[in-house]
Image (cartoon, rainbow, N blue to C red; front, top):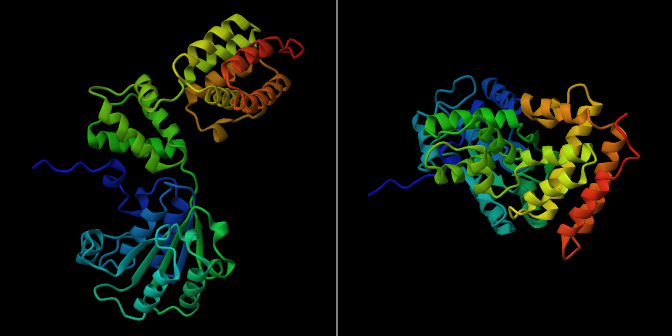
Length: 369
């Protein structure tokens, strides 16, 4: 019987703190707390999806119970680590509050916490999507957090910390997980594609990292989808077609035509873009992001810190930004925003794009110099 395929985001779930991309500030603090024996009874992990909250919680649950920790990391080889990983040790409990949000679920936990761990040092309760708990459930949980047994650790993970009651927040050590930068995602993906034997061009890998939008899990899911399609080497065009996104490279000739007030060229390029089945609203949004990049290149010495693009792409942006003055860029962004709102209401938004191209190419009141 063939071995069941395991999705990349599950197969490559981080096993030690260093594997959690882009969260060094969290990983180092947690490792030091374990090394120094300064372990709190409650933690709150906040951040957008796919930034490593649950993965870090699982690593931490093993590290505090590991028989042979290595600089605060779990060894993942001792009986305790392996037991937690395969589920044979039940001292680490995971609960999805999105589907278990009621007071009865928390009452079950309250009844269990009084008992000492059977196979480990700490009982660890990981509550994912903690903001989904009801008010009654939070109140029940608060009673446990006020006077927790010494062998209990709670880890609450949430994408919406503002929904967590202040009484709960004040009893937790809070860690904010940042959106993962494109370079960090690309670095991690590069390691994975080598290990998996996936052939992919550098610009395609960079596009996958960009499409991940700060989420490592999303990046791995996109890579998984594209790798299943490709028979040979994955290229930039393959990613564009598989994911069904707009090819951003076509924006450069459109913007060049606008810079030269060439309405004919701008209309032709925009039409080619839309004939590929792309949504008009998506096109206008991409145009806004493109002109935003030009504006940042025009007004900042080092725009790469914000744009998170490769040096090659930044150079292209800078060269194109030189064709505009800052006033014109700001004005174009404002007009694009207005037309985006308008296009979402029209039955024929393509007409809106054609009017917009003519308008942008007719703005000769704002010359380059």
